[in-house]
Length: 305
Image 1 (cartoon, rainbow, N blue to C red):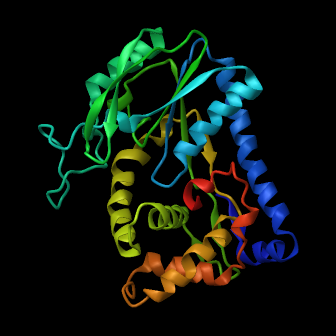
Image 2: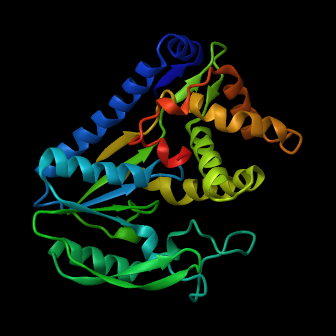
């Protein structure tokens, strides 16, 4: 397990924050490049790439970056497809329920399994099919669009259940990738910030800035998301051929300017919340890094805009 010490991080921020950002981005892109090299070498036998990871791991940005690097560096065309398009409408029969009686949106059984597996086989064979489109505002399928994988091209499919054989099937023609935040921040007193809380910070930024959600709702929703992660995502991590750590050493210092004041203002609401306490404690320890230092193409832009 990799750790980054907070006191060392503050030292680098005070001396050269631009280099910290550059080195972090380079580490991420070197992982992407290694993966893309392997994908390009197996394009004829493994035309599908399945990308899984928990909420806030950066699946969408990473999938799009893989597609870009495949094209620019390896002359390999690709298409990115979100498994979210295969969600069943909320009024579909036999939708799974959670312990509170609500639809369990984290369950793989919210997915149209038969249609998805049929479409994946068509992708592999280069056959045209009608791909569904999901309307999240209406929480229902809105229509279909024709799709066919071109010869020697790659289809990149990303979603939380991408590595679950119940969802994407047992096959030998896909490259499986698991992405998440894997590095931990660590204080001089050996207190550790779990990667899950870094992912929560990502969601706190994104959902409060762009999705109109208040902090309390985001914390509450993340609890159910984390339960789903333990039940439906982590058990299939072993299927990954490659793993990518999307942690950026500078990201928590960047989130400080977006979150710290807001979190302090609502501290009475979260007086007994250990996740809140850990996040605030680590934000208070770290020097800030200006968002102006974040490249426009960075994965972190998915969360801060």
